[in-house]
Length: 211
Image 1 (cartoon, rainbow, N blue to C red):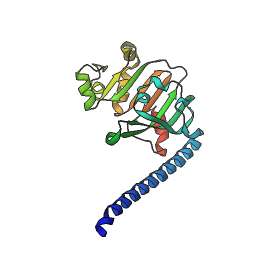
Image 2 (image 1 turned 180 degrees about the vertical axis):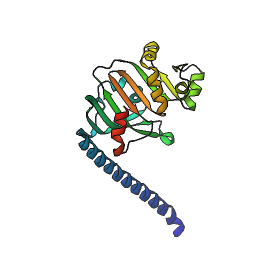
Image 3 (image 1 turned 45 degrees about the horizontal axis):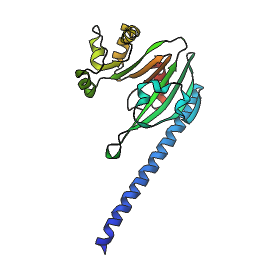
Image 4 (image 1 turned 90 degrees about the horizontal axis):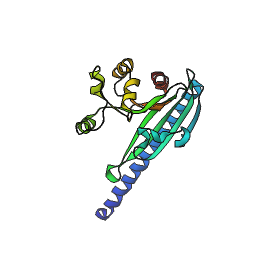
């Protein structure tokens, strides 16, 4: 009798574990939303627990928002920082499917300075996979006078000469000092984040200041 019931016991335990994990994750996300809403209030910013992708115009022009599927924005706070239109939000998207399915999470700082005019570019840390790609001709804009920057970052964009002009020696030095920083930019829009990292509420002001 026990032998017959054993598979059902195992199934019940597994289902129970999934339910517990799901409830725990839901509770932690609820607590995060509440903490971020409080942080937005302290900044004097507005807050929305979820937001449509068109909350910021032109997202489709930037590399971060063209990866995967199931793209979503949550914990969207927005206002001004030093007179500049700004926002901070959690962003997630899913890649692959089945057993290889993976959801990517990061917090993003968005800045929209009125007097900025940038060429469109994408800046990422240069991991092993990117190094292999560049060996086969994948675009990577390097700077001979800044080998440290070129070693640690992959910089891409259609207008290479304009991008080179935009990335001054001081800016290259800045990125060397903050390894792992990702940036998508173009026009008067900038998105700054660390891949796979979500800010803690107490870190928001420092990341906005970094932006």
